Amino acid sequence: MTRRPAPGERGRLQVEGLVARVLLWGGLLSIALVVVGLALYAGHGDFRHHSLDVARAVRPERHDHPPEVFVSLTEVFQGLAARPIDPVATIALGLVVLLATPVLGVAVAIGGFLAAGDRRYAAIAAAVFAMLALSALLTGGVG
Image (cartoon, rainbow, N blue to C red; front, side, top):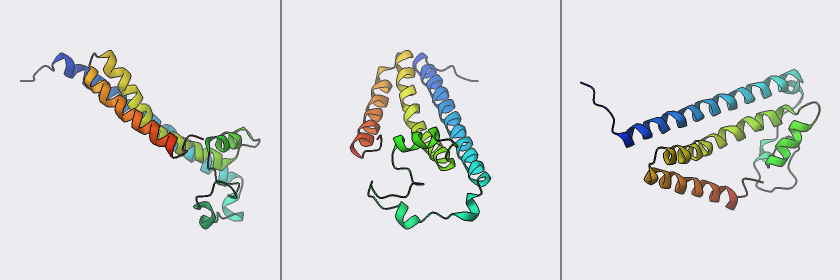
C-alpha cells in the first residue's frame, strides 16, 4: 500500500520538484554558454595563438590583470557587449550562471514554501539565502 503524503509534506515535495527544475535548467544553461564560448574561442583560432598565463590570472589583485581574465560582472558584460563578442566573456557568463543557480534555487524555495504555507522551511531557506547574499557582499563577489 502506498501512503498519501500529509498536506505539509505535499507542499514540500512540490517545492523540491520546483527547485530541482531550477537547478537542472540553470546547470544546462551554464553548460550551453560554456560550450558556445569554447566554440567561439576555437572559431577565432585562439587555441593556437594564445595561452593564458595562469600565474597572472590567479593573483588576488583586482588591478593589473590580463584583459582575458574577468574579475567582475561589469567586465563580463562589457565583454559580451563588445563586437565581436568576447568568447572568454561567454565562458565567464556560463560560470556566473553556474554559481548563481543554487542561489536562485534557494530564492525559489522561499517563495514555494511560503506559497505552501510552510513558514518554518521558508524561514530556514531565508536564513540560507541571507548567508549567501551576505557572503557575496562581504567578499566583493557581486561587483
